[in-house]
View (cartoon, rainbow, N blue to C red):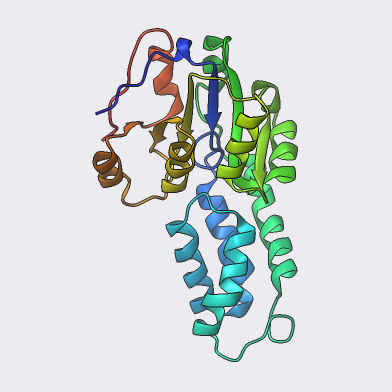
Length: 238
């Protein structure tokens, strides 16, 4: 098993948003269901299954894939714009359905305290959520001041966000990524970034086996890091 160094030694902490900073995974799942429901329950549930299986992928990719691949299987002969909503309609419906939930869902306990305990580190958000939406929600909820390294999201994928911020010198090593999906780990691994899995709000059903297979460390929630901010390493959550 890999060892995570004490947090006071990291110069950059990168966070996924949904399921890590905000308890918003279920909010997003229900928004996908609502946006696709005009195409029928079978199509909507197929989109939800695809969404959950591909945590961290942007809504743009998921809805485009839905219209190109899932819809023809679930509703043969149906055409976006004639029989039901097209891509832009679905994106709008999704954003409207998700908005209120993002503004009211719980924030990770201990976040402010962890920010105060890691004054040496730049904090950054790298999310699959819409970037403009994320920045607005974080501003309105009074969370943006903690993320001095920036709040980034789609349409750029996470791997591209990390690549770009590394190239411009915004990500300083040592660096760690806190995420709750397979894609979070893959994006971090692609750029040689240490990874810590956060499990309490994840929708990744196979996370325990995945962590064991890849020798990854995990925690249940961010507030567990407070006790370790100056001294501890972390073990796999169970």
